[in-house]
Amino acid sequence: MKATVRAHTNIALIKYWGKRDENLFLPTNSSLSITLDRFYTETTVHFDHCLSEDVFWLNHVQADQKETKKIRAFLNKVRDLTGEVRSARVESVNHVPTASGFASSASGFAALAGATVKASGVTLSERELSQIARQGSGSACRSIFGGFVEWQKGIATDGSDSYAVQLLDQKAWDLRILAIEVSTEAKKVLSREGMKRTVATSPFYQGWLKATEVDLVTAKKAIAQRSFTLLGETLESNALKMHATTLGADPPFMYWQSSTLIVMETVQALRDKGLEAYFTIDAGPNVKVICKPEVEQKLINELSRLDVVKHIYPCQIGPGLCYLEG
Ligand code: DP6
Image 1 (cartoon, rainbow, N blue to C red):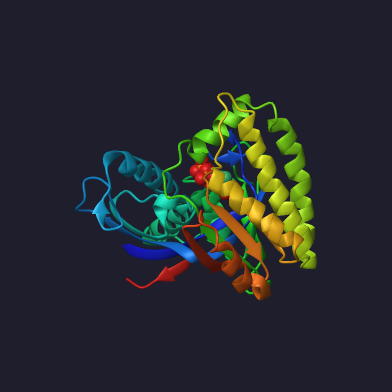
Image 2 (cartoon, rainbow, N blue to C red):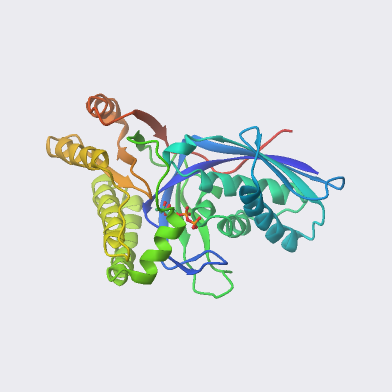
């Protein structure tokens, strides 16, 4: 049996930063994201009794042992659940600028979860799929859904109440996201390692947990009221607080480069001049800027003047999993 699925990346407005269980990918805090239309992964899973082991092709090239091992471990989790016994050929194509740190693991594991389950001939709810995708990469559980999505952290030790839910669908609130590339270098501290180190060593971590709970409530209120200013202020401050925890880690680390700061300062300065936009940053130097449709072009014009900006990818809010032919 064979299935092909497309899943889109998402960016967190309230960040997931820290795990309470590394095996099950259970987070210490709930998070909130928007799914992006522009960046996605398409994955085909083909269970084939002629194969003696799983094989993984990424962007038309056979992946190395390390990458294949990660995919195999994930497939094993799904096989345990669905009773599938055959090995699989997995082919993934990322329509995400991978080298530049625009998270492809979220779209990658969401597409893999969808295609693996479908190719096993099993039907699961989106909530169940979200729980499976979570066990490949935490943020992937949010990419099962389009629009505005909350990952509810849950409290159960088996992860049964840790999944994503959709808050608003793709068309409910038209906001624009500019993904600003300032660097294409691979990051030095991967998000998985970064959050682990922060939880274990940063004295600011407890403060983060307290503050992010409040930010989540505020962000949900802003979304329900379609209050862009309240949402923007909350998401920008939440990103800054996440990054502050890394400065307190041992050894300390920082995802920003000087170019990141220039973009952040410019967004704030433009805002002071009446061009309303807010930034957020994940585990890398690139910046995402959120705005309303009416200021998008003006913002692109202003930001593209900066020497440090290599590329601007304008994005809109995107859909959830999409099952493709073939
Ligand atoms: C900063 O989902 O990539 O982008 O669960 O270890 O695979 P793992 O981590 P991952 O972390 C994402 C961290 C973040 C914030 C977010 O997307 O919420």
